[in-house]
Amino acid sequence: MEQIVDMMSIAAPVEENLVEFESAFKDNLHADIPLAEQVVHYISGLKGKRIRPILLFLSAKLHGQINDKTLGCGLVIELLHTATLVHDDVVDASDMRRGEPTVNSLWNNKISVLVGDFLFSKTLTTMLDIRDHEVLAVFSRAAKEITEGELLQIERARDFEMTESVYFDLIYKKTASLFSAACELGAFSVNDDPYSRQKMRDYGNHLGMAFQIQDDLLDYVGNRYAMGKPTGSDIRESKITLPLIYAFNLAKESLSQEIRDILSGGVEDDDQLDRVVEFAVSHGGVEYAKKVAANYADKALSILQSYPEGDAKQALDDLVKFTVDRDK
Image (cartoon, rainbow, N blue to C red; front, top):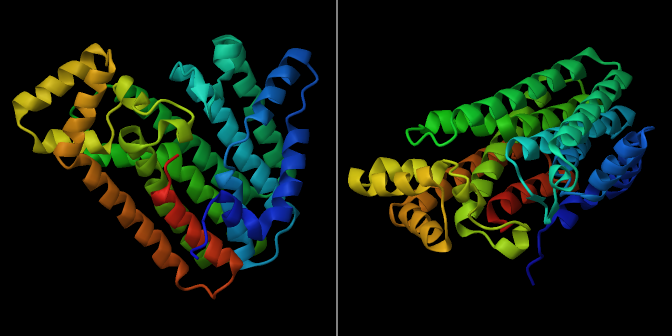
């Protein structure tokens, strides 16, 4: 009987480290101001997959013995990610995340922005506690790239002429950059070897690209109940992702213009949503995006081939496959 691969089985080799991480993360979110404490307590309950700290711990275990520096880097990576999500929800005016109301929908945008800033300050102080210039450099670069990605996404909103190169730059900055940082710092926390750092940086980059392309694909083919958000949410917001970019390049101009008109006016009902999805599917956009995601996944897997067999390597291998096979 084939073993089911999910995030629980992937995280199993570092389960004890994650228990320690969860306790430290909860302690780190403490705030002296009652309102802030109320909000961050709510945020701490919105536990996601913890993919980034899992990546970091697995990368560390692949190269040596997990230690206090590894834990510190894991806290920083998740604090930074959480802060960006709080701000993202304000920028995107999102009402739901992980199947639960967002901070901005329960409180307001002002509180969300300030709590996001509070989380960024927690990120900085935790980063300084590690007392390592190289760690600071990697996280600073990742924070810069994530911010650039958000700005690029706003600049390119409803850009029907978006090219693949711009799209790839966007998803690298928004998603893959932090995956890459997590993997690099996992290796660095236990073994200061430039070659190992580069390999894991590349692995995280390829995995992150595959992850985001798959995430964008789920808007067209995902299970809305499993995802905790409506399938087609990106389409309703007129976000241009790889399936549409490819379809626009292949379709007749008259048909492309019809889809642009729907997106420009805002998708008003399920019929229009289905029309956009059908357009992307029938012109090969969905299948093309699947192939690109699979290509990035293959690149990530090829990097792991140079490592000896072990539970950390197997988990990182499984995570790549889980990324491109997931439905949420």
